[in-house]
Length: 171
Image 1 (spheres, helix red, strand yellow):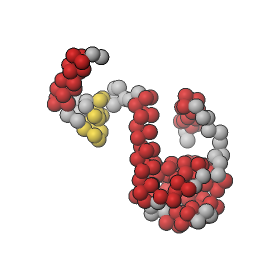
Image 2 (cartoon, helix red, strand yellow):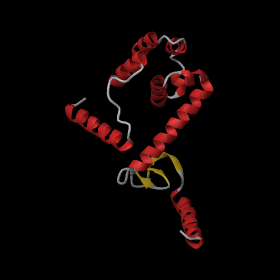
Image 3 (spheres, one colour):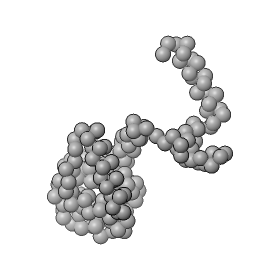
Image 4 (cartoon, helix red, strand yellow):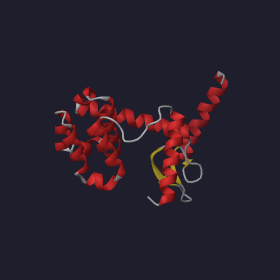
């Protein structure tokens, strides 16, 4: 895009923001459509795979930064246990994760079996079901109880098939 086109695009963006507004939380527009950002109609348009993965990357980065601030020792854990902690932080939010005092104490001490037990002995585990069981297994054993494809496209295909299977089975 040349400089003239960029100026036109920037002007258009400014006018769209003026007319649509910039909302950082979902809301219902004047005709009841779920909307976010600058008039993005989520009901009819949704988001793209790239947008979803961009948001995921940002959310992971935010969780990492919050864990760095609250419990910097988490970086000393092996990769799988760091991922378990990030997964929980992503799901719960770091403030709620910090309430898992016995879990965090056991984890810091390297008592992964007790940390795993503490995960399963929580309301969170009851709420998320299999997720908690899989993460507790990974915490205890330092490996996941399933194969995790490394390449992004294969991972997304795997996840989509798994979710589709579960929806059809009725969870």
